[in-house]
Length: 186
Image (cartoon, rainbow, N blue to C red; front, side, top):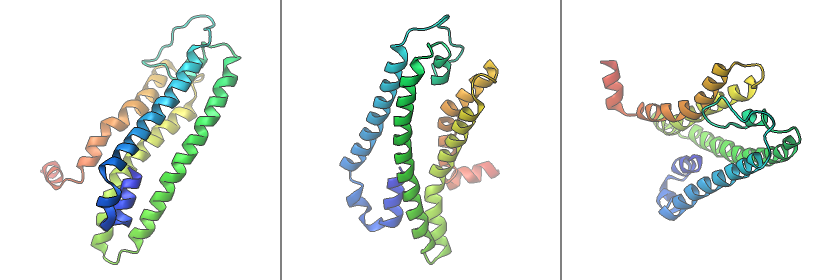
């Protein structure tokens, strides 16, 4: 999505040529395939290990740290290696995201008219707000830990990063629509 915004703002006359249906299909397929490979690697690694004690997890989905509580200690080593690999993938994707937005904002700052700058920024702002909301909820989940928080807190934190961003996404994107803004004011 950031590449789409990058092409739309930095190369608007070439948008139709660069963002053709085959390129969009490749981007979507790559995103889904990388998410599938990442998930299968973690799930396969976690659930090939034997459980110690009870295998009951008080969560509405099996999040990694909660599964680690019921796995033997030697399973942590292989999951840590997968975590390092996923951290590298995350840093690669995050670097591409940040670099595209640096290029977008440097291009926006060169637009001479204030109205043109506003229009370009409003094109990117919904995606940035959604991304920021997701990053904040993930950061809260990571920083809170699981051992020192209650069951309800764990559930609310997991719910925030799995449901809050998708729930707010249509609302954030519809705020650019003038009819909705007028309806909200009246």
